[in-house]
Amino acid sequence: DDVTIIVPGTEVSISRVRLIGTRRADWLRAARFAVEDDISVPVESLHVATGQRASTGDLTDVCLVAKPVMDGWMQSLSDGGLEEARIVPDTTLLPPGAAPLDVGTHIAVSLPDRRFAIDKSLPAELISALTTHAGAATERSGDPLLTLAGHMLSGETGIDLRQADYARRAELP
Image 1: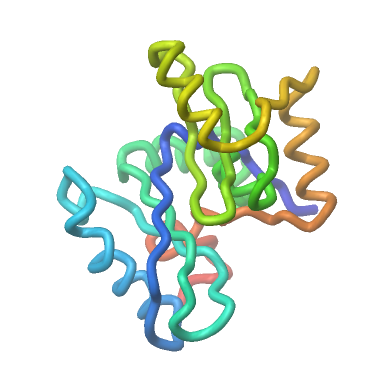
Image 2: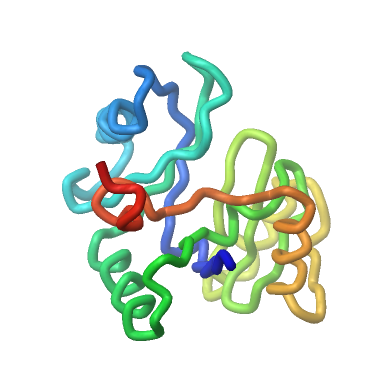
């Protein structure tokens, strides 16, 4: 039985980059280089995970997570006996163009060309502007986890952050 742990999109930055190479290791190296000028922290302090690439040269979603955050999630998995679980940001479980989803502390947004989370502690005017830009009313379901699980059942697998240094034992080279 596969277990998926859904983590908040507010802890994950998602960029779209053009990846080169044929191996995931090449993609990860290319992704680090591609985002280096767009971030305000040293790229070495971030864990990078890539989504599935449709074909060579296509834009692909790349997740960036602070290594201490990723380490904390890994420790929680270990403490809970879930060492083999997938770790997936909630924003990557929404189909492209889906209505923004209110998940409690933040709103997950998945536009056709980008995915992000809006922290609800931001000023209301900014939240309104960002959700209006998303083009649809925010979905406020009774249980956002059930909504995300429904997307998973419909085929949205999200981006598993368990890559490179955080890969499951069976996936290590």
